[in-house]
Length: 298
Ligand code: AMP
Image 1 (tube, rainbow, N blue to C red):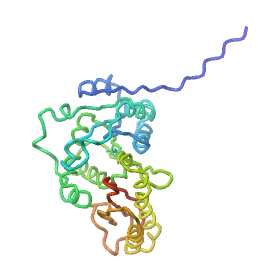
Image 2 (image 1 turned 45 degrees about the vertical axis):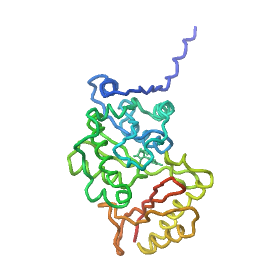
Image 3 (image 1 turned 90 degrees about the vertical axis):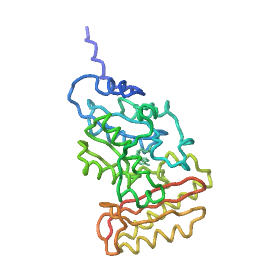
């Protein structure tokens, strides 16, 4: 009699566990003492393909046996009173599904009272001068709020790796600097920006845009690509090409367009050469959008 064929090895079905308290998170993220690599992806929820790319990168880094945590927390500290804290999109059930599909083991979605049990923290981290330019000029205190929650979530999750998107280039640079300056024992890894096929950078805030505004918003990535196309001609040509696209665009209320030296996140001098970030921030209708590209300036 023929032997039955061995069953094909079933693909590992990963179930992500949803936790809301630090205690439950810790029990889920460290079920035993096994020495595996672990990684965290911090988000404000309303997850999309950009977040998915971070989660996949985290899974790839730690391998199939490693652990990946996704945090979902809309951090009140990084919103000014005039900003969109109350209307920020929330979709936790869908977020857990997306996180799970792309390789997360645990989702940590705490309430503000869990993260800040003593109320608004009296002691906060300061992003220093790097946090006062560009985004920081329009959003005073924003990066102090970001660093404070990132530091707390690094303490809670204690990862080997933390993944952040290049989409928020200034945030990534400041977090890398915090980790270096304050000796955090974690490797911060940046992940390239995911875009729609027409160039629009994915963002949770895109869902605020009307159809017309969405079309108008394409001028931002168009301007960045136009600048990148002339990177070989130097900083002045890059700035001019990008500014030209924005000047001809409808419905764009420009905050800044800047060619930035990514090291200290300062405006690149006119004779700058090397890797730079061309960044733009603008309001389209009532929605504030940011975007950037990396380019080699010569
Ligand atoms: P947020 O939920 O907007 O705070 O974003 C959480 C993380 O996802 C941050 O590290 C962002 O930089 C990153 N991220 C957001 N949008 C994108 C995108 N389109 N491509 C890559 N990463 C992104």
